[in-house]
Image (spheres, rainbow, N blue to C red):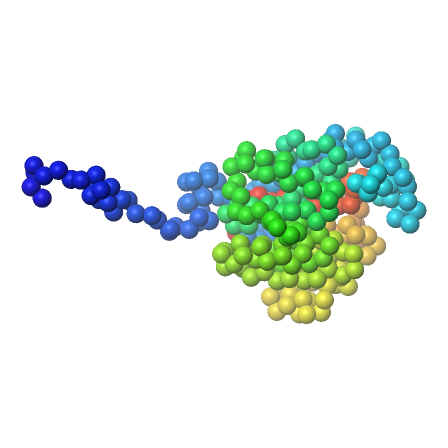
Length: 337
């Protein structure tokens, strides 16, 4: 082209964008991309790597409906709120001060392990289960999946959860929508390429399909296991406590799944039924070290005998709202293992 010939606007546009093409690689979830675009290496691809950051919610004003009392229903051994909008597993209303003290002790134990604790911002009034931050979301490599709660009285927990994640800058990879149901307690990692989700009244096949699509992009297989009876979440039946060890209630899990765990090289440690439903509800803070409710002393002994270190915390008050330490924590960043 001669110097006096002018480049047309069209030619200039084409020449410019030939020089600056789209770049699909490195992939979104690659550490270099996460740190460049999103500020941190967000995400989790296992359940036992060194825990770096976790989301919690200190019990507060959202417990007021339970503290005002409800109807004690003998057949449930629980106080039930109007229109079944909450339950509390005791005759007496909650002691909020004691619940807060126990939650503070639990979060201190996290900090003592080097975990950065993030608090849920502005939980909505009436959302009495907001303390259980595990359920509104699932964190995978690169970001979070917003869940859709299975029961109507928990619908609405998702909004402050999403706002909190947005504030700290974690990417939202997907939102369970349509007729899909999914709660985070229904999900766990077995290793960095295998995860499991339980199907039942809180998480359905459509929710699992949507979750599986996200995991497929990451090269992760999602194994689906049916809950037994009125079981809510799989984290009441199995939790990973080391790279190759899991604490389990084997009676809650199908035979084929137990065989699959064995094939993956996972040693099964039996939780003691004397601890009740909270025996499995512990949280690994690094491989072979967990935080566990002091209520679960028999299961803690089982872990100790199998080389797993246990940090005990009192958590019996919050148990009465239907969850434990695992339910009350959502890992946002873990190290690879």
